[in-house]
Image 1: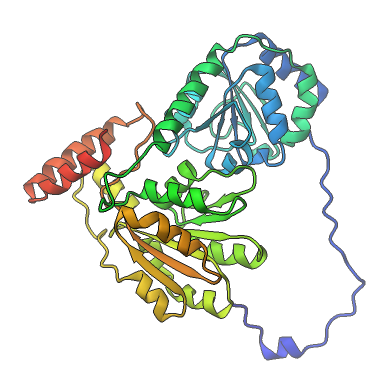
Image 2 (image 1 turned 30 degrees about the horizontal axis):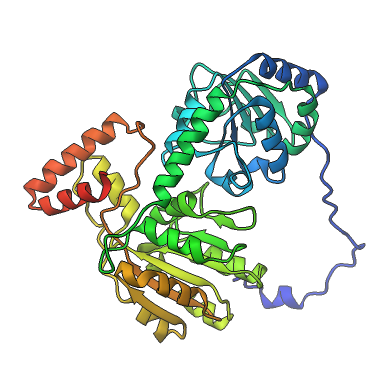
Amino acid sequence: MLVVPADVANAASHDEAPYAVHARRPLIRPSDADLDEIAAILNKSDGITIYAGAGCAGAHDEVVATAARLMAPVAHTSRGKDFLEYDNPYNVGMTGIIGGGAGYHAVLDCNVLLLLGADFAWSQFYPNRATIIQIDIDPTHIGRRHPVAIGAVGNIKATLEALLPRLEQHEDDGFLVAHVKRFQKDVAAAKAETVSGPDAAISGTYLTKVINKYAAEDALFAADDGTATVWMLRHIDTGGKRRTFASLLHGTMAGGMASALGLQKCQPGRQVICLAGDGGFAMLLGDLLTTVQENLPIKIVVYDNGKLGFVEIEQKAAGLVPVYTDLKNPDFGEVAKAMGLWGDSISKAGDLEEAVQTWLAQPGPAVLHVKVNPMQLVMPPSPLVAPEAVVGMAVYSARAMLHGKGHDVWEMMVENIP
């Protein structure tokens, strides 16, 4: 809300000449000499990986064509997901803590890393011995995360259009095939997740996959930071029409519902789905009144694991028995009804598919409260488990046993170890 003092609001406006904002985008790409130097390295190299970020928006076809020319797997950042994973036979997914094994190894095991419009912050996920070529529209991004051999400033689409004619067709696809096969195997394993029966508990991953199955093909997803965002990035297929949103730069808690409200307001004809954590949703319960007052038909699913999940994982990894992370949640479905929305609550896997379809079919705003398995962890790509995290989990397990919480340790192991 912006409050304007009465004297300012009543003041006469200045007599100024009409002014319009002109925002035409200039064509920005590296010089011919830089492009020749980049092409010379790529043409003589094998084992090339493309690591692409949000700067590749609008350059999907050029990135895929470059990958085909170089026989290079394409890993992407979380913010690059929407622009690169669809219609891309060279895709190997994300790297990083919330990524997968295929993307992780494709980046770390390459001889040459072509970094396109990516400013991924964590230096431990960059290769130490590879030649790194970075192209970015922002010159301040060049080399700031990891030393690079060549850094060039340019719009990714325009740069690749100029670079492609300089690139020779690579024939050896061994490096590419190995990582693509690994990625496809991981995707198949993830999609094969089932439940043991109709009365079984619901995992956060299984809930997300069911939502992915029934959501509109051009749906907009907004997730609270934490496990909801991880499940969204791993298990929502975008297909070139959907978009995913989260506070990926700042890690702001409870951003899902606020983002969903804004998205629905600016895209009134599209389905907008909020993937909310129970902690984040409870923080912004007042915004449910906004959905009714503004008649914004967002669909909110609450992942109720009864805790601040990501905070608890961090505490366990540090060897601590979690403190101040447990939540005493009400029935959010009933809360929604009291506020004038459609609401429902479920806890059994056998009820999930019908409940999700009914929830998504509501003409107005709707809240689906789902009790999810509280012991499901966010597993990093194998074998990337930091030694200190392993030690921390071991210390946590010992302390939990001493505090009479051995059942929690056992349940965590059963849920997360195949």
